[in-house]
Structure formats: C-alpha cells, structure tokens
Amino acid sequence: MNGIFQSFFYQPILNLLVFLYNIFGDLGLAIIFLTILIKLILYPLSKKSIKSQKALQDLQPKIEEVKKKNKGDQQATSVELMALYKENKVNPFSSCLPLLIQLPFFIAIFRVFRDGFAQNHLDLLYTFVKNPGTIDVISFGFFNLAEKSIVLALLAGLAQFWQAKMMTTKKPEIKTEGAKDEGMMAIMNKQMLYIMPGVTVFIGLTMPAGLTFYWFLTTLFTALQQKVTFNKDRDDSNKIKEVKVLN
Image 1 (cartoon, rainbow, N blue to C red):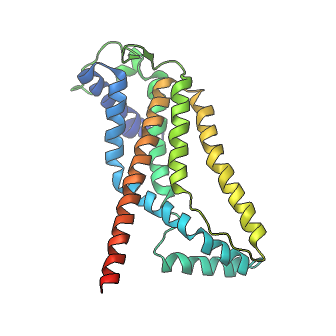
Image 2: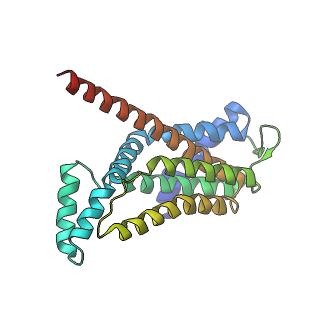
Image 3: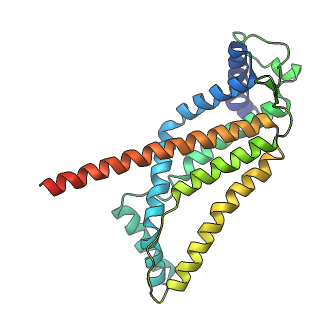
C-alpha cells in the first residue's frame, strides 16, 4: 500500500514541486503554483461538492421539520429525507468525495515537507526533473517555510472562517413546538463556525510553514470558488425570476 501511495501521490507531487522550484527559484512561488494545479485537477469535483454543500444548507429548515415530524421513528425519517433529497436533486454524500480525494494529496505534501527535501528523497526525482541539490526553504527572501508560522496559521484560520461563513444559511424564526430544538441547533451551527477555524489555527501552529501555506492557499482558493459559484447561481436565479415576471 505504501508503494502505491509513493508511486501515485508522493513521488509525482515531489517531482512537480521540485520542477516548479527549478522554474521560479522560490519555494513559496512553487507552492502557489502547485496549489493552483491541484485545484484545477480537482475543479470538477470541487465545484460539485460546493453546490451540494450549499444545497444541503438551504434544505436544513425542511430537514429539521422532517426530523421533528417523525421524532422517534428513524425509518420514517430516513424515507422522507431520501424523498426530500431526491425531490431537490441533492446527494448528501457527494460533498464528502472531493474531501476524501484531496486527503492523499495533503498527506503527500506533508511528507514532502517533512522529509522530501533530503538528498535520499531527491533521488526519487524523474530523469527529466533536474536535481537542484538542495532546496532553499527561505521564501520571498524572508519566510522560512521549514519552521512553524503563527501568521500563516492565523491566515489559514481566517480563510476557513470565510469559507464556512458563506455556507451558513440564516433561518427564519419560527415559533413552534420545536422552536427550542431549532434554537439549540442554530447555536451548535454557530459554535462550529468558530470552532473549525480555531482547530485550523491550532493544527497550523504544529506544522511546517510550507504545509500551512499550502493549507491556507487551498482554503482561500476554495472560498473564492464558492463565492464565484454562489454569485453565478444567484444571477441565474434572478434571470429566471425576471423571465417569469415578464411572462
């Protein structure tokens, strides 16, 4: 299994990163372009995941209604939820696939920064990738990407917060028998909005700055992709409404 991981993830990413480093002569720039290339490769899956996550968020009020209606009857709840997903063309599991696919890339990049720049690992370079001998971990003339960085950890946390904030859906206040449960759910969702960025900062503080930089860039690009996707969907929705009004 380790051999498969090395052949299909670790070695290609190591070679691509060194190839970009040879072009730009700066590890930070190499990481930026490596992130862009990986995001482009995963773009179709990422776009589908973003739309699925947003659709699930928009369905949360109806999902909570189904759970309250069938409280204690798990089978009835499952049947109605599947019908609700089918009616709204939402796959509740499609948002997880891109995350699972990105995990091997993240692990591979972690291992590259942990020990990939040692000479015995640079021997894994393909014949067409020049061996630079040593990798200068000082990026942009002052940033040591081999050490831990509080600044990059905080930036990664802020990017995570922005991404999560866009996914939140403001629910209308409904005074019903289950309003208390709805309020508790809203509080939990709000707590998660702040907990996840906090966890991101904590983990970022324990990793080499190069990996935290990659994490920050990946989250930032994902948030930007979310914003573009949401704006496009909103514009398309407004156009459909305008057409209906004119008709």
